[in-house]
Amino acid sequence: MRKNAGDSSRGCLAIKVLKSADLYRRIEGSWYGIVLGADSAT
Image (cartoon, rainbow, N blue to C red; front, side):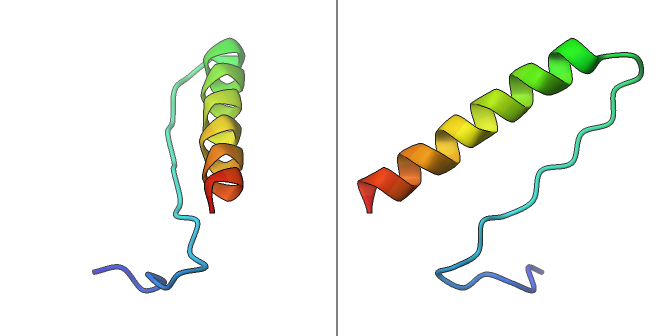
């Protein structure tokens, strides 16, 4: 059950991969793109 499901909720994404800084940066960049795209659409 989600505790913070209001309109201002951004969600939380947690991924654990050993020795993968490049993958982390790619996922982080994608996530920021999604968030910024959602902000500009509203």
